[in-house]
Image (cartoon, rainbow, N blue to C red; front, side):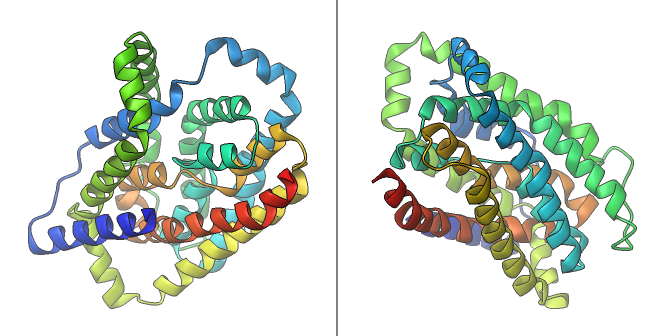
Length: 315
């Protein structure tokens, strides 16, 4: 159902932009994503749970090692093989943004430790600035390989970090603390979270694909259609490699490590799509392609892992 919603939102957005002048990007979409997608997930993050970081420090260390060193290295290798700057950047952006809107669902279904899941969520949100820095370094040091230039002016990703941190981390966290004191509102959001998430996802996809810059995808298809299969193959290879790596590193018998496992085999695709819109001028419109196809790959991929792997572990 969610795949249908995703495809419908993307196609409708592209159609709207194609027959109109399209939307002009406004950073308030980040605030909208922060309040509707991120803020509700922070209700269960309690400051006193910080002690779990010390109690399960090796799980946290493994998670950071996988998500900020090993997966980015894999994405870098696969990205370089694509021979396209934008596709490689999109894949790298996916690699440095772990988790996602449904990660807690997979954690709960597999009987993993949800407390560790929320701690990892919070840590990954705090590290968004690191993710942007890593993408900035990727752009700086790989531009020569792709025979492309990397902007060093106001369009540079380095300059978006403050706005992203404010809109996606600080404001949603403060809002979550306020809502916790308003019991009826908190209960309503928790009860309708699935609907809020799906509606929000549809609006975000419709808006982002309806942007004026997103219409460049049609030109991409006309002049470089080969990037479509290249992107699909790159995304599938990346997800398969991330699964093999995570299964090797984590002990799935442990509820805590199962939670960390899900943060390594799923990526924060919607956040990646939001952030990629900042960097179309830098990496080109093809940066969106791996993120688009990640929506189609990740959901059935996670369902397969839950059915084929996790059910056996839980038993």
